[in-house]
Length: 104
Length: 332
Image (cartoon, rainbow over all chains, first blue to last red):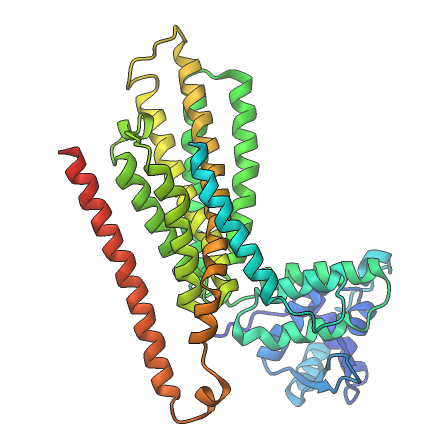
């Protein structure tokens, strides 16, 4: 059974980053760098958001021997969810200072 | 005793030779980060395999060794914790209970028999070692096709070990070992477990993991039982010829148990690896071809696979029954 717990602060940050340009496909590493999340936190969040239908995923074909790259953007349900979230608590985004560890 | 290591090393040599023969170099060189991440994404369930490919695809576009390593390390931690755990959670829970019980009994024996600071240090070292075992086991049980045969293999090893040494607490203190026993428990059984694991999953790599998991689970179970034996019997059991104190005797026995734990895990993993590698050619023949999978004979392949698993299980059960009967007859 899927449990829909309230999203964590980090998940809200990811949602808001995606909502800034909802039509644009984003790479995981760039998204993590933008919201200052390590890969160990980012990917579980992306998985949960995709499981809840808030995220659309796609693959960018690999060039030459390079593997394909995963892309993410908000689904329609995701956009509505962020709109509701913003209406409920407009200042929930937490800005943290960027440091070198957050790149991972 | 040293003669036991001759066939063991021989098997190891055969396994290494076979593995090297089957190794193909058809991929560009991987750095540490990619190797680590490839290992990590293997922990993900089949349902999450796509996310593993996403992590690997992203890593390919990250420059700089340190950045790549940090990214890979984070992904591995994420993969370790990412649900669903499914049946793996039960396996980890069981091993956690065994390890926790063993540490508790060990610590109580240290306190009860007054082993002092040395004993406390021993508890600390044991705790660190067992945590390492549990982390390794939790990674192994999440690998596809490893949990069930690995835990069954561990139960089989423990059963054979007890059949040969004896089932009572006294037997754990003073096992009645005859010269051929080490050959069985240190070579034949781990080799059989590794080979059976490879045949079960039709994959030599899975067989190696099955042997490692079997070693850890059997080691934890037998260690708990033998530590309970020391805690209950203390310096009791066979008369000690030297004039040692009770504390010295108990300390010696607890130390022996720790050495046996390490030895059992190491030997099972090593010899089981050889068994899995030796089963490699049979596995290659049994593996269905592309035509088998896509054609109408898929159901026949599934039936054959089920039959093979049933056969392996039946063989394990038969050997266990024979060994138990042998042990019982020897006792009478």
